[in-house]
Amino acid sequence: MTNDSIWIVGASSGIGREVARQLADNGNNVIISARTADALAEFAASKPDALSALPLDVADKASVTAAVDRLYAADAGPETVLLNAGSYQPMSFDHFSAEKAMHLMDVNYFGVVRVIEQLLPRFLERKAGRIIVVASVAGYQGLPLALAYGPSKAALINLCEALRVELEGSGVTIQLVNPGFVKTPLTAGNKFKMPFLMEVEDAASRIIRGMEDNAFEIAFPRRFACILKFIRMLPYAISLPLIRKGTGG
Image 1 (cartoon, one colour):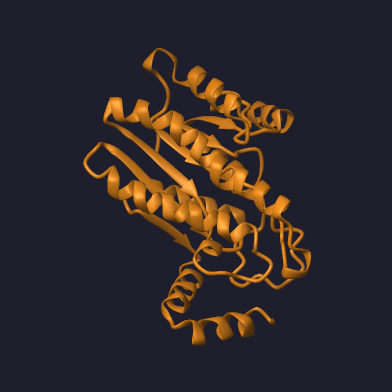
Image 2: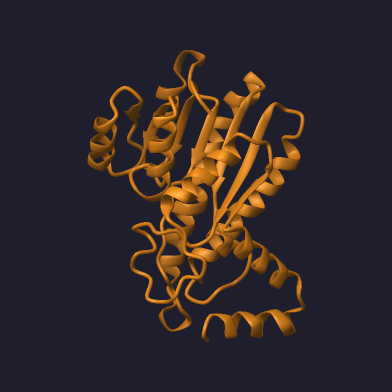
């Protein structure tokens, strides 16, 4: 992708930041958004000819509305949007917290929903647009320590599946990104072994390659995604013991 304007929500660190960096290096104009305005400004200053900062808090509807109105004023604005904003906090049965679960759902799921609510009418009027949503392979299957995180990503997967079907023929494309474990600040605190752990540069390049295609799902590492999908197809009497054994439970 070159010479295109692309908006990335959740670009101050991790996968979103690296996707923005690579896209900028490839000649794209990239609008970067995140809640952390200082980190965003510092990143934008590193490539002032290609990156422009637009602070945004996906958990705040007024912030989302103001940012989208500003970006898409006068019927302008990019037709490609990557929604990567999200948070991760491990949660197990012995530290079960409704507050933590609601917080992750508000950021990871409803944060995406708030942005899509503002984008869809504009894209449908144009009969053009591409929305790429970053979920996770953790949304495929219930996993230990993901009692709050996994359901938020499963909700995103379900949402994107339904939108892809409903938007067929509208000119608006929905794509779903399901990464496995990637070396980012969000995963740095994990105390367990992360299978098929990927470098963030590799993850970002795979997302960009997928953005150039029209495939619905961009999932990686492929082997890990296929393993989890296969386990999901098995009867619970087989799949749940497999998950328990595979995760050291």
